[in-house]
Length: 55
View 1 (spheres, rainbow, N blue to C red):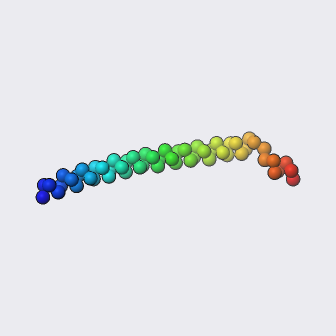
View 2: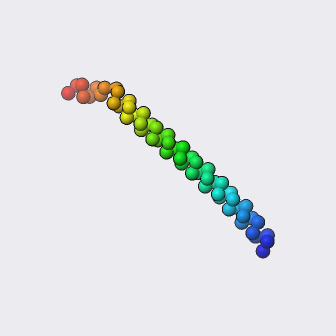
View 3: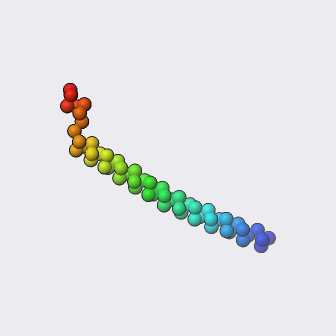
């Protein structure tokens, strides 16, 4: 029975590390997406739209 508990604990800690790393990557990706949307909105506001000028 002891031989089964130790591998189970090792595998669970590996899953925990993977989950923490995944959460960190997800947070970083979300931050980058928000930053890109903000920069895009500023660029759209500053750069004039040529289609509007033609009408």
